[in-house]
Image (cartoon, rainbow, N blue to C red; front, side, top):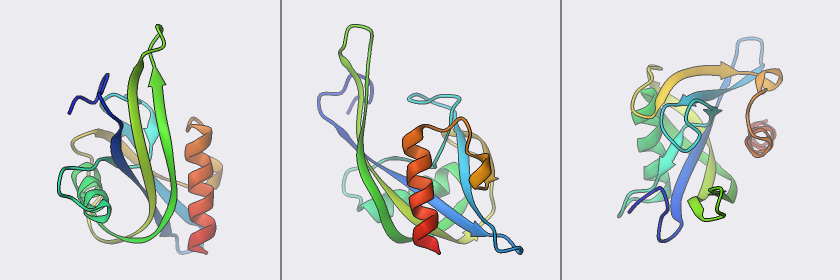
Length: 145
């Protein structure tokens, strides 16, 4: 299925991976995307669901591919649409996304596939993210408490 100018929406998943620091401050993993959509922007790890894959299998695979981390799903945070249109108003991208609160269970942080950079960020370090991404992160952090 074409991702750009698709014939139908594409199902996607995102991970809010929470790490608790020794001082009890919570941080989330952000990646800088290496491909469209959102190329060059900071975001949550994730991607498209493959045929025959459950949502949980998809998020675990995507996180491992992009970051080298093994995660388990704790809970569903939010579902939403991400629709981008071109100058003519045609739908360029349409994703139906489900973001999950995840916990690290193994692996080592190393960027790969769509991620060109990764960092752990606290609540005061979310500048540059979309308003919706910040909203999802804050909701997930409340859920993780």
